[in-house]
Length: 434
Ligand code: DLL
Image 1 (tube, rainbow, N blue to C red):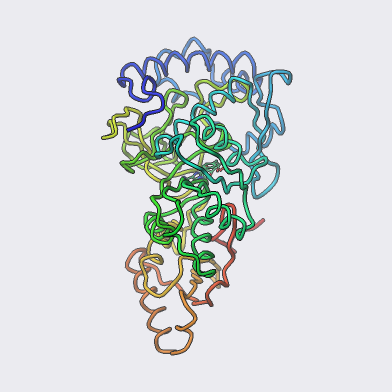
Image 2: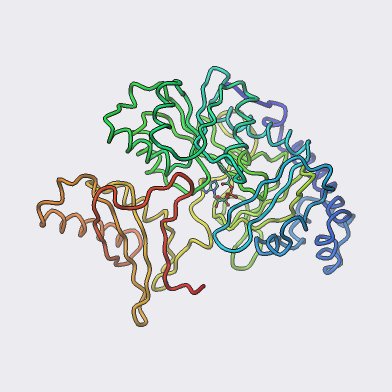
């Protein structure tokens, strides 16, 4: 088994903790000196960098939120001067200003190392040909993975996002062995291949590295079946650098976090208090080595849980469970907390429907209404009415069994729900204003 950086990925946890503390103390001093936002925030609570004596002291520091980042658009939180910045990226953001992040030369070097580590975790080697179907641009996915894959020695196909017919052609003609995409787009590629009568069994493709949006275990099985590959999960976010923050190894028992570069806490999203390891909560990240855009206690809104115990692969870095949803994706419907991923799991397990759906929530009078649009797998089913009735009743029963909620099920024609090449939007909450 290939480990990219044995020294840093397999060190005893006591040594890792010492390294984290040393780097954290440096980072706290660094931001206090270089970024007025942090100086002000620390001064407000009477905190001085020398007060940080142990890692747990981090819990005394204030959180950084996405709104804070937007307030300092574009460069207000940068710690390095312009002449040291060699790259800028930004997260698109669905509303308002994007979040802009910068990288020094050393940040770029670390990012490359961490994405190289992450693709090695998933099983990529210099023998592979890797097709990147993420957008190359301000989004971190394309460029981020590009450099890591190159460092590992894989042959990179920078296909970028979109143009599905060309993606399929490249996979076949350039004999790609690894596909890098969002899980939703990977599924769509499988669907298109089938439509065009292409059998992925004739491809060389063996491995997928998917991330950037939430997906379920059931979705993984579906992608593996359609594309005839092993599908792995990896996680990252622009604020922390992009992809390369964590990824699955061949054990596929959670994503290994690059803990020598980041400290992750899980907090109760309601109260903000730190939870013991193993409990589900919102992930909060602190960077330990970043120069241009260091970040202390960034609230991700992503829900997961940490596993600090060593993995069967030999790495000692803690793992995080797949993201079950985001705090801002969680719907409260008639008092019941609903994550779209729970609905996805039910749908993908149902026979006769395709793994595409759309969730709409309306308020009718005082009552919330949950409507789920689901695509039929094939148009053959459009014929017998009683079969459709039965199918939607079965889905409704299964949703009820999982969520204790009655949902209205709308069966729609194959191919009628929107496909995206990037991150998918599947939830539309019409109760929200603005
Ligand atoms: O999506 C970085 C990335 C690119 C990760 C390519 C992996 C692969 P942002 O656009 O800033 O950055 O979006 C970050 O996407 O807070 C999560 O909500 C979500 N996300 C990212 N990876 C996963 C994943 C990139 N594996 C936001 N599972 C994060 C679930 C994910 N959600």
